[in-house]
Image (tube, rainbow, N blue to C red):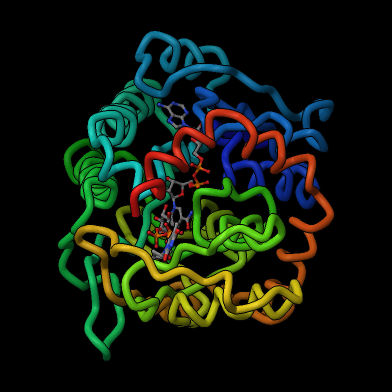
Length: 337
Ligand code: NAD
Ligand code: TDX
């Protein structure tokens, strides 16, 4: 039995990861450490909460005492570090918590792992650390790190810290850098769930700028399978890009959602652009594919169909969110746009 510390396992990608690996693998015991910020939701883990190979701990990754206690108690083999403040727009409204959780929090975990010893520490990174592309080209693992938002800058610092712990202390670190995820359980501040929910409520769909910014989309389970593979088989000290080569301009995604829901394009509203808005992301994941044999299993068409259907069928999940604090965030972010 491998003992895993998963951080941020009550968020979108982390909860999909916990549910998926507990379903698919019998050799993992998971401790999920999550602070339950606005983005953490224990409802996401309903299918796992009674599993004997699962424990939940509410706590902050910045709490060195708690983190050290967990390492001492459970003697983890693996760490999969998802916990982070993850939304670019929120980082523009206020960056401090991003540096606190994403940089200091990562350092606290690296320190505990160094002192207690682990077999693998997987830092979950993002392609946003590579900055923005023009009309051509792709991000490889050798692309210079030039993040543009407070969010991506904090994630770049966390990646660098993890790699430094490998070089300096020989900590067995691996880093993944993934493109934009979508799927069930994504907090509705992000593009795809926000547009689905607004369309279902016949509300305006706020498209930033000219709608021609391009993102490279991947279904969350494909990302999670890559994480699991890199955790077990990745070479220590290495970075692996993760992506499904599915580049789409934002407006195309928005129109597809409206079409799937039978809603009119008149709901689209072009609004003031995001400051420092990265124009295009495109990720080359050939290293992961050729070295470790990973391939995305879900086509964009099938997985988008599944995702839209999930939000249609899980109205109570998102209604609880959009009727709470989210309303204040929405007003601050979109009210005067
Ligand atoms: P999310 O915002 O949905 O979830 C983040 C989780 O981390 C929440 O459960 C939250 O409570 C927890 N958390 C935040 N700060 C914490 C702290 N200080 N201590 C303990 N827990 C804390 O984010 P997500 O979209 O699931 O992203 C997960 C990870 O994947 C992040 O590291 C993110 O940078 C990375 N990533 C995300 C994407 C994407 O498209 N969403 C793409 C590439 C990489
Ligand atoms: O209301 C909106 N209107 C809009 O046009 C929102 C929320 C977004 N957008 C645009 C901005 C981006 O070009 O859609 C695109 C996607 O936006 P987000 O969902 O906010 O994602 P992004 O900024 O690309 O960052 C995401 O991908 C990388 C995740 O939030 C990060 O956690 C991840 O690291």
